[in-house]
Image 1 (tube, rainbow, N blue to C red):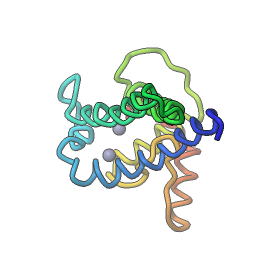
Image 2: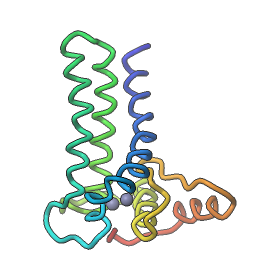
Image 3: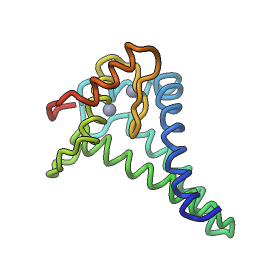
Length: 156
Ligand SMILES: [Zn+2]
Ligand SMILES: [Zn+2]
């Protein structure tokens, strides 16, 4: 498999991993840390910030083993790390505005913001970040279309 396919495959697969981690870990046994993210901000950093630190260990280990000679892991680790960087930008910078930097308002990013706001409002779907599809019946598809169409404000 070519390096580019490994990288893109790992990046894409990470959306599923991210969904599962958010739904079944962070909203499961990890809720003790994640609850701080669903509450009004109380400090510059929140207990939920421990999750990306923990998850970054995976990318670090992949790249570490790649440096020891397991070459395909270099591209898988690059894809995992690139997804983490994209998640960081979308979630922390674009959606929650934790860095006050000027940002363009792009339709795709506004869709992600609206979908994530929906998660914060209800504490349920969508758990995904870069492809926050709402699964289920016609009502859920309607909701997903509504999230895409709705214009949203700047607060999360
Ligand atoms: Zn959030
Ligand atoms: Zn959540």
